Length: 565
Image 1 (cartoon, helix red, strand yellow):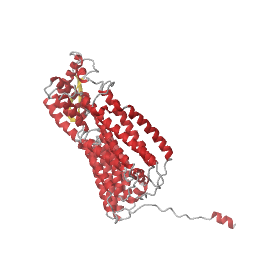
Image 2 (cartoon, rainbow, N blue to C red):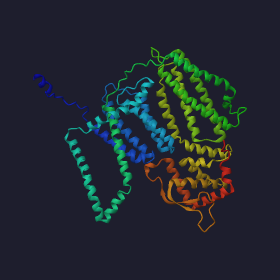
Image 3 (cartoon, rainbow, N blue to C red):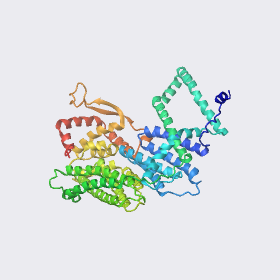
Image 4 (cartoon, rainbow, N blue to C red):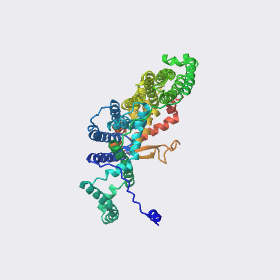
């Protein structure tokens, strides 16, 4: 009987204590700033094509979060120290905003977006009092983990944010609840009011003209905002990871040494076999047996870019995975590292020399600029790797972060697209190039159109005609309007080139919002408006010239000269 009573006895278990924190005014302010940043990111960043709108969005978020962390963490830390590396990352991260204003290149925008987020994480994490690890692998984790940790702590951060017990917060929560409850009632009332009055119907129609798109933007904002808010709160409230990881024992030295010996032996044989042919690029002389400058330079450059990229990863992981008991790299691996670094630096210099030869012969392209920039980045990182073989104080990943930020800033602020177009036009005029590739100028968009307009207004009739045809291709991308046949049904039949038609602009601009603008796009509109105004019937005339060019064969023969190269 006693045993049954014990078995059926009720056991009380205390509910688990909810984790969290008591928010203050600073938490509420940064949460509001994060929500505004999410709103700007969707409405003016994503829908603005990551131009001026994204630059403004990131600047608002950067400044708001910096003020929040300085006020709540940095100034309250008695042992505070300024980490030069994290500050440099922050400066570069904010400076990369100019790339979205000064450049219209989508690849520059994408790379800048990735770089500014990575640099920003390092800056904010350092500003929040987290210690930046000394090792390269530690810095990699330091960059990756805060965003992931903030996602895992998102429920706790959002719940804590709305758990304040003060009277003001309670009133705010009740007001929000009242607004939410009023939405279904409005859904019933507004349709009735619309049917009752024509003026109100017109007003609502204008407000909800793009209701589907607006709802999509709001939904996306609601999805993004909690993650930004959680990230901000985590930097202050989240647990700081201690760098207590033990040095990695890594792979056996014999294994890595055999791997590096095999690789370096292959590179040595290649280097010796190519001595006469390979290094002729430095003198700008075409080696005997090479079919053409283009084939020689192309074959030598892009393959060596791939080799440099592979060597970067091989050397970096060799440094990370090969650790002796005293924390240093074994001498035999240092020797392999020195040879790999020197070899890569030599082929990097050779590849850049080949690219200079190629550009001098066939003109500049954005891809050639980006490839050369990567080789410069590779050279800087390999110099740091070479020095790392002699000093453990050299931090490779730190160097890579800062170098990547600086190179991207130069490419964006220097506007590689405009530089390419300017160089090619100038090279043609002084005789270095035999022709102008109008199709390529078209592909440069906002940065190529100004030069097309300049050529179209020039004195060379043949070039002017071809430039006008190219303008008729590219300008419709920046204006709104419709198309019409070049000839009427009763006129001479149109040459069957997929039913050629000309563009009729209606005066509207495809990019009319300020947040979708950048300086190249603004300059394009300024020049294009003036050109179209001073050339009435331009699009129709350009299509007629296109037909004549195709019939005579002049367009293809002139524009595609040396295209095989």
